[in-house]
View 1 (tube, helix red, strand yellow):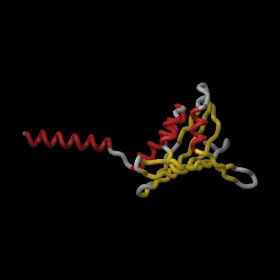
View 2 (cartoon, one colour):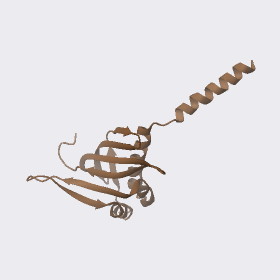
View 3 (cartoon, helix red, strand yellow):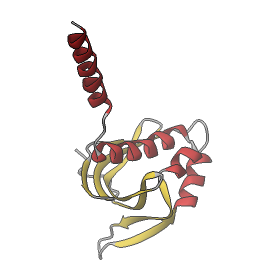
View 4 (cartoon, one colour):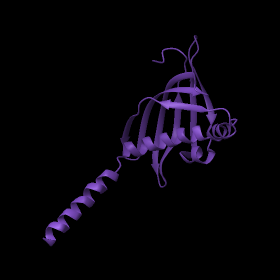
Length: 152
């Protein structure tokens, strides 16, 4: 009888532990979710916490004569988010997470739609590069596209 109780208790513990286990892909997704949750909350500390100290941000600027790339400092992005007026709601809605992990490097492709005060602004794709550092997964690079058409 004692063996059965011990076996049942150990089985329940292992099953519950498995429910809390997290894959690296899930851990990467949580970092990206935290970025956009922090952005919606205008929480500068939360937004800054997901980036590595020398992270880069870029945007593809589509033009008829050919695209160019614009760069943005993470510190400037964090400042803009935290200084957004209280009545302005920013909501980047991620439509899908396509994540690949190789050891301590990860790439994520996340199509999105962006809304300001509930009104559609633009859509596109974010391409994230992340590295698993001593503190956990950190974003080291983002490049995105932005458009107003073909957003279905």
